[in-house]
Amino acid sequence: MTFSILNIIGSAIQVNIFNVYIGQIRNMHGFKKYINLTCGHFPFFFHSIIFRVLALSFFLVYLDFKAILPIFLILLSNLIIGYLTSSEHKLSKDVRRALRIVKKSHKEIEDHPTLQAKGGGGSKSNTSVWLNSFLGICVPTCFVQDVEPVLLLDLEEKIQQQIFESQKNYQRKVIKYQIQTSVTIILVTLLTVFCLVNFTDYGYNPNRFNNLDFNIYCSVIFTMSITALLFVREIDVYEAFKMNEAP
Image 1 (tube, one colour):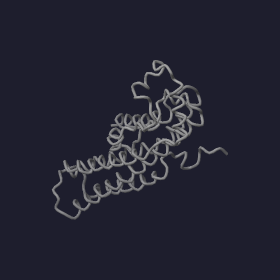
Image 2 (cartoon, one colour):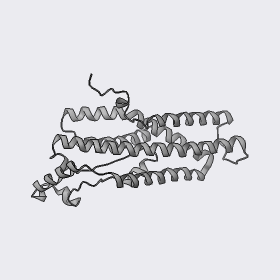
Image 3 (cartoon, rainbow, N blue to C red):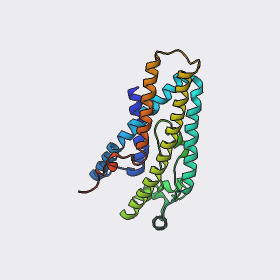
Image 4 (cartoon, helix red, strand yellow):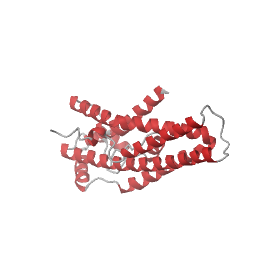
């Protein structure tokens, strides 16, 4: 169980941080930036994974195969969020202009084989909506790569920062919507299970929980749901507490 959670956290960091903001660690500055982002996002990823694993496991115990419904709803909401937001996301005119200049400067396609594989390395978002949606069941996820790394390295620092800022804003928006919808679905399902067990003759499968244990578990999941909503404003704790600002 511990290794599974660590593996999910590692995948979340790889998809949401390294592939979006780092790409390659070429110097100590890049390494420090990676460590800063990883440590800042770790509380969010850890809480999100523990919260969802506990909640979905709890639903499986009491709802059996009916627990597929909230899982499907989370997946469906992630897909809707992904397609709606990706259609609105695009780079600024300045960035697109800089990209055209960089692509024109590469006369030999052999020097940049990924351009050929990606059909010219356009600026359209390369977000994998289905990947984000499936991973989003366990932890809110938004992988976005507007520009191929081979092109990004040839852009000016100012343009690179604009691209990273655009990707950050888009990622934050998608993750915020994923948190809101998934927490809402989990809370509604939790309330349904709570009422079925305490106030009806619902025939759930026998388990080791007595009624007190059940109510405590419900309280824990409810508390974690409220805590998850606190990350809607900012998922990086360093940014939330303004610890990255220069004195």
